[in-house]
Image (cartoon, rainbow, N blue to C red; front, side, top):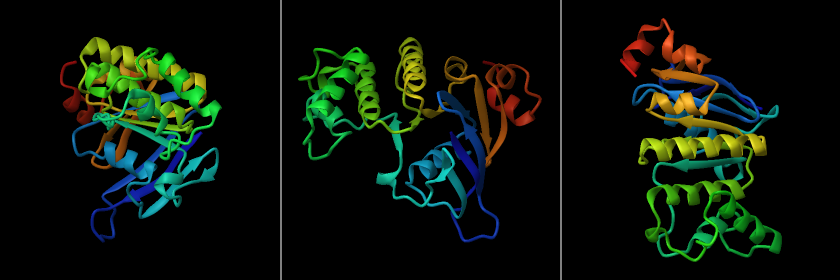
Length: 236
């Protein structure tokens, strides 16, 4: 569904790019990205989202190139560690902004906001402000906002890093369900190998701006012979 083909990015006008990515993600799949800080995980997500411009290569969605589209026109939703909710607005409005910044929603769109909040166990909280919620609830609101956008690509950049292990596992399980139900392709960046075990049948190890390994998660975390993988993991 999502294909990354020789996607190059550089911080200077050198002949050799700093980063080159090749990757495939299937519909209904959450693919985890792990690796050292500065290895290129968040850069890859920014290239897919359109926040950065690649020097070369393609981003294909169902065979159609999207790398030249403006960020706002790409079929991409992204959730960060910082939930980016507006503190002065209630939950309903924060989610509705994902559909239309003018908040001129059709009845069907308004229903979709309430359905997303219900699906994410936030029913009855529509009128509350983000400050009245727990960290886990705020991340659910951010995920609801991404869900109502109905984009085919979901990017999660350390989205649940601020949550405790139990809440993080719950949120990742919820993401898996939503991705499968909606036929999305998702990429999950995390510094916690356990997140990959929960989220993904396959995990990519990113190192020095390359996909150094792409294997089943169990094999990558437990049996990989790559020295850089073993050094990164230490003992988990």
